[in-house]
Image (cartoon, rainbow over all chains, first blue to last red; front, top):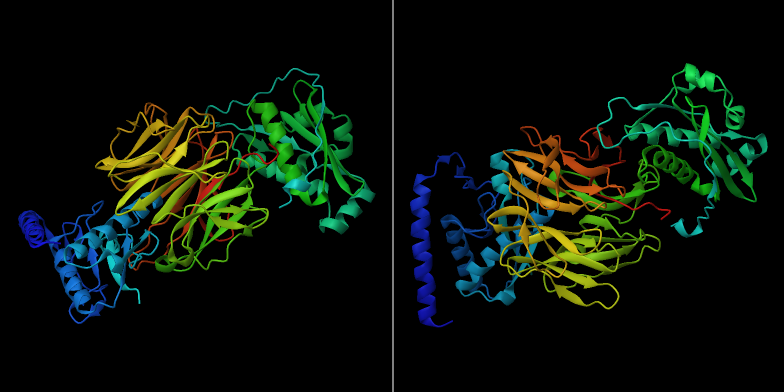
Length: 159
Length: 446
């Protein structure tokens, strides 16, 4: 990737984050939810010190939030430093959708994360994607908070 | 399985009487037809032979219980209590005393006889119109004794057909996913059972996640999604031989498989780089065809019974909605326009309706609409339910429901349910374990 393209990407991301931030200000933050995106940390595991393993999504959404981008930038930095490590991005959905559509949306969420890691220089050869749809929730609750924890993409070491 | 050993000889004896009884299945039936199912009569010698082979005290009574249960489950019939029967089974089968059956308010009467002939089970049965005092139907057939449960189902199908004018759906099976374990780590196995829950068999061991099994119209093959080696792919399983093979071995996830109506193709979704499109694979020459090409998620495809059209769901208009197209992917048309999200469209075997799942204001509905999207009718509302599958006659839908867990995340369960197209006769389908993703077979005899 050449420098100008890199710069352009960074610029786009900056603009996108500004727009998202602007939206976020208007969204209500209640407990561990911002809008309906999970902001807590109790389900998170760490790939390395300070490198969270997962990002969360809004209902029916597959776009990355500002917080998700920050997490993924940390993952990218860690992956650059540990060039022998490959990862599987496991995409998940909450239980409030049909099984088959959830498989597709899980795949799309994991790919959102993958695309972002790639813009930060991680080769696609090192990243595989696996969707679980609604099959592997982390929280078995039937409430908005539980669902928000389950709409996620988790980076798992593959080797 | 035992399909190929089945020898059924249907001997139709001409019908002599005009049908006076008729059951209208197009309306919700609030007063089911009172019917007396007399136990099939059996001679001592046959009784003892069957007792030895099948370990059943009286196979004649056992078969009539199957018929009775089937009729009851259909919601259209009310089988009367046997204690009130005045006439003995053998005499009733020869010549019913209609006054006796009339007395207990039976409108239809089923009688019959089982015999053990040349190592086979021979059954004959008759359907009588009690009010008219006439025989409506008489049939006889022969099969291997181990098929005795199917004998009960076939009798029910014939009675149902005679009284409603529609094909039956009792001599059929359900393939489904058996579930166990905590919600966060469910163990799932493919399982198959008779339509009434008997003869349950597990087809996989539970080592890998399996989802969405669907019957081929030819009944011996099933297509499903397996996470074997953590690669979610579409598989084909021969339920007679147990042989499995991957068919959707694409460079990415393949899912949401179904057969074409002629059983020759599998239609499925292929997800790659965050985009799911619909493809078909010809099972004979393995030629793959791309049917949709759109940056949105296109999935849950289902063919019309004539194979000319496909219905599927897509989020190309932002949220999941139902679309139809020609089988070559042309003429894509959105058909769901009501409030909410629509998914899992399945074309009725009769061709005129599409069943679907709808999510609106936090509730899940199973409903039907015409194939142009008009005439939407919601049959049932619940916390979570989805994935309807049609009975082969297009009169009943089977689907699965999941419960809402409590504040501690406990109390999760998944069960199969069925409901008539009329919106009546909603009932839980008993399974040995928790269950989901049911798929109804065609009639086994066809």
